[in-house]
Length: 368
Picture 1 (cartoon, rainbow, N blue to C red):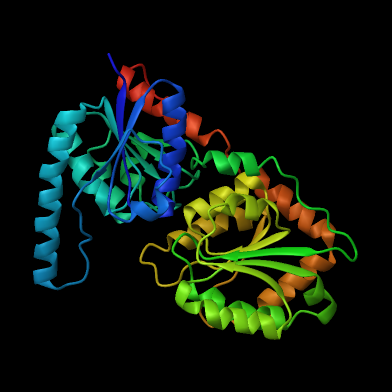
Picture 2: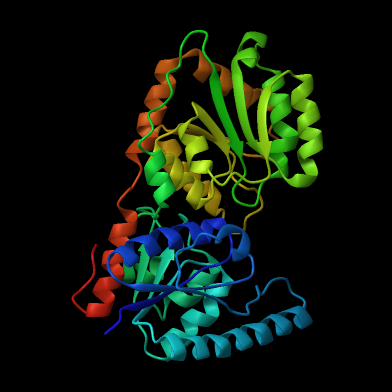
């Protein structure tokens, strides 16, 4: 009998990248993989190795507006009915969810139809959609040893790590660039798959506070929103910085590996990739999050000595500039932080998650 699995994920890189990593492993093991997601996957999931991509209607219940809540409920109901039709056609032996409200209709439909389901939580805090679905799931895979908000489901939790894409595993083979007395200084700045206006507005002020000799050696790679690009180009031109700017870098894992230091948000995929590749970082968690998941993610690398965490609220350029100057002036600190970050990496996470899924299907038990 053909082995079929349906992976379902929200359409952002943070949800799709670990699903993509699992897909590669399951395909190697002889599975046919299908993906259920939303329309955003066209940007971040274009190279997803799926036999088919199913776009399922979904909505995010938010706010206190009764009309909007009702509209979201109707959309999710439509998604549930669409998901049942997809499941009847594909007949998967398991459905694996990676978070985000687009996973709600397929996961609920699978549970109602008696199909084994597994959730993967990328963050150190369980997301709202996963909390909703965890009660009906057979297993919950965690990226970090501590998963806040999942205490009610502790008997279902299995530590697998956060799967990283093959491109990340390839980048992990690249050694930290040598840091010589007068050689180039490689700095990469990004805000996650959706970009971050904050860094475009903030980083020129940071770099402008570095010593001139250090600025002259700087090789900058920075992700900027398209609408912010002209402003960023002007700022770095005035500082005479060698800057490679783009809205999205398809080869971001390689960019990270070629860096001495990274400045970024602390989404789950970013933290997992920094750890797998082994690069020191300055992390600025996304502020205003209800769950404070990025803060929890950042603490994993910071506690290990592989990252420095800066809260965005009230942050001025000087603190980050001071850390950058100190690290570039002291290569031993940079090397130690890189090693500490790598120590938190879980390059076998995709294999462990695949073991968990296959154990659910076979009924032979699951890995811990």
